[in-house]
Length: 396
Image (cartoon, rainbow, N blue to C red; front, top):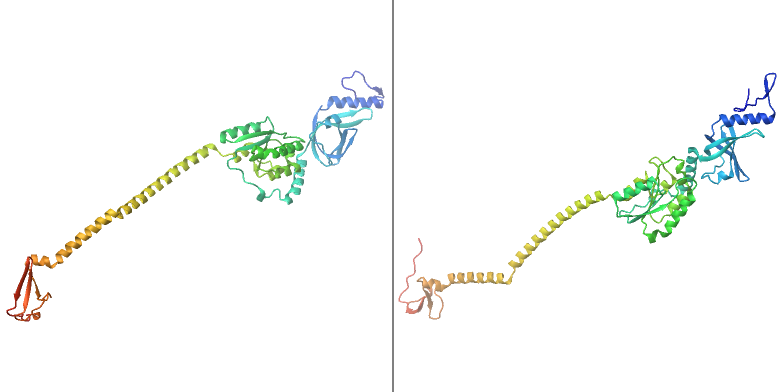
């Protein structure tokens, strides 16, 4: 028997069968649904025939051959970050509305989000449009600055992602100045993100921005769909400085990741990729310092050796030394001349014989008996006349 729960009134009976008017029947059904069904539920469906009437959005929620009518009241429609289109897969937060006047059952949509299937389909659609233009080509990727002096962080403020990035920056390389630019990171906020980035681009040169980090912490792939938009992708592609994306988790890839000059697995990984590590750099500098000291010591030793060689060469070529060598040589030559001089022989008791014309006599054949001869001794000369000549006989 169909009764209204909690009501003391009972339907009229006719031969044991409850008897209702149409209004009573519809009221009873409505009361049953209101009291016996969950006040809120999640519903997975595909959107069909969305139509806006008097500010309200009416649509069919379809699952294969089964469907139910849904409605998003105008007051709620203005609050939604995602407005479903024909064929979109969605996950609806809703409740049942039953109008007793016409026995009409409708799902009142309190919130709606795209399903993973819809998100991935939109991703592929945007990718197929941008890829032929070369926006994802590795050749257009710019290298990251090695020692960035100032970088911009675009993320939600406050957020765990921002806190992690700030901590990582302090630990790794506190010399880099960080400019935090708050942006919304979830919902239908792509236009706001693009506006914030374009505003930053206009001031990038005057602010000294050398790199741009777009970051968002973890979430479902559906939550990251805002980074799959074509306007945002084209905006990032036009950046005057390198763009690093650290969005979601390692397995999450968005269109923004594909366009960026560098894709990091997480927001923290983006800062790790962009900033040098000071402890590692300190060790590297210490090694370089040691290498420079060793190189300098070798160069100094080499220079000292060359200087000593040059000094020795200068000493060897010094005019005083050369003059001394020449003097020594002259002394030796003088001694040699003295040793070979006839006067040296005369001092030893020898004599030189000359004829009256002063010619040196070397053989008895140059003399005749009666000829005059002059004997030259060490201390004077003796004039003599040849009395006779006795040649030596032949040798044995």
